[in-house]
Image 1: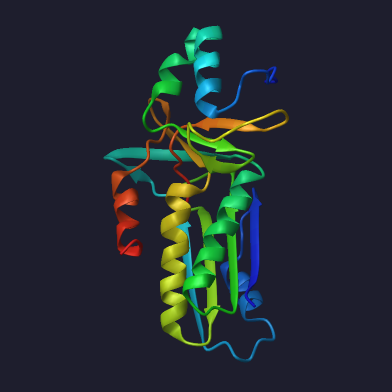
Image 2: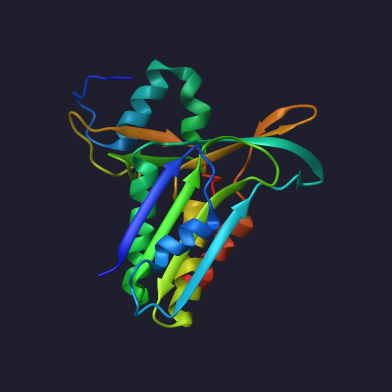
Length: 64
Length: 153
């Protein structure tokens, strides 16, 4: 989905924003095993983000 | 300079053909190590009828490329090829191919295992398992995380 980037300075801020607007995401976004990617590279809650960045949240991977 | 090829595809792959391509015309290659991962018909005591593999397009290729780059930094390898399948698979179908060619066997053995160990925990692929009673998304195995420890010493 596309979000307005104003005020979304980090992944942690984005998570908080998503959880307040979409309460259904709260459990998943609080899961300790959830992985974060920013622009398709593994990131952490403190990773800075800005306009145009692609942010992904996903469960631990099970390929191979 | 290592020649690296990473492919994500739904079609099956031919292990013999991939391994021939790995050697190519490079006469300095003295060792080839390959790993092929297959769909098992049993998981945690339950009969598995099939798997659906999904990936994060773009990032999956990037993540594998990064892992291969690190392997090439640690060992002297000539050629690396990784093929990972996505989509619907049946028991005994091949899922993943990792081929490493090097001048001497030690580098190829180590690099192949390293690439596979990191692919399991860092490349964004997910398996959904079909059993008689249900479809379920697989959870990551703690043993896969533990496998990384030997590379971090």
